[in-house]
Image 1 (cartoon, rainbow, N blue to C red):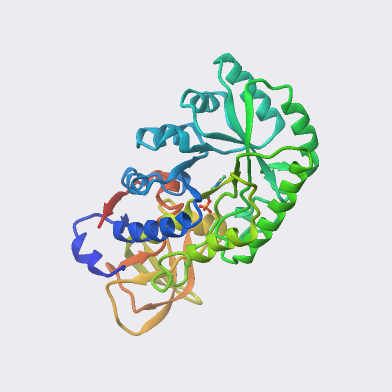
Image 2 (cartoon, rainbow, N blue to C red; image 1 turned 135 degrees about the horizontal axis):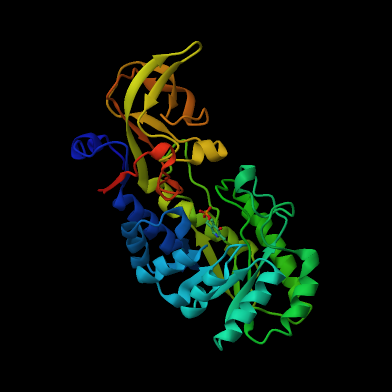
Length: 381
Ligand SMILES: *Cc1c(COP(=O)(O)O)cnc(C)c1O
């Protein structure tokens, strides 16, 4: 559980810094494994959510595979000791160099997003006298009901192969000697909190499987991607995502063929709640309609609010005075560098320690040096 002990324990660490609670991560992984194991589901951790070495090691201890979206993520996963036969490689713009990295490491599967990509993988695999396992990433046209910037499974999105292209694709596959079709892959979006969305996905996957079965194609692996959301508003009340209902729903609604294996690629749900961005208040400034609390962390440390209007719970760990309303903003020269408007915080002053919660996913990995700001320290407890 998150406590203000952070203030005393890390009082010598310059702010802003990322704090990870490895105990929360472990509890999350335990819950995940015990629910996924009920059905023999395979879970690959999506490295892009957080690729900190200590986090990657903790996750590996629980036997998860890796879901990578770049050649460097494959190298990172291998370097951290993830089994190459558990590495899936997704992404709609795989470069030749990245494909070669995947081939050299004999990864489990390339999740392919277009016919031109499959042609290139076939050619590069032929150059190495190898056969690449591939899954077709199919765009199921299911609405994830999340922010439109993190919706990926609609026909208007750039991701995946559309249904009307499939006939062509499976016809073309017959002429590729260095490709083996082993799976179907889906990933419809991120931060999905309405579980009925996943039920809709299951129903759609069943229909798509029927289409394949009617053409005598039964693949070994179905991969339904990631996207399970977390509670950004009430992190302490819902520290561990509802893995029970999540996996239970797939068990109930997804029809697997005999000996078919089901795979998941979770990122956010595993690491979001174990991370906090810790910052200090630099100045309080009175505005026209509001007071600004200007903190020393900004969009350079946590891009999500500026990138897709995300909100995080903000806490003042130093004060228990009566609350006032503040716009909590960063120091970066962009108006979108704002963590929250009209937030209730105990009366806040210069030097107060501010925690921005649920920052373990898509936080540190998106840190950048805009305004030539420094990259920050990372602490663990
Ligand atoms: C980003 C991504 C994931 C992980 O998504 P989360 O919302 O973090 O669970 C899984 N699969 C693919 C293909 C992705 O691009």
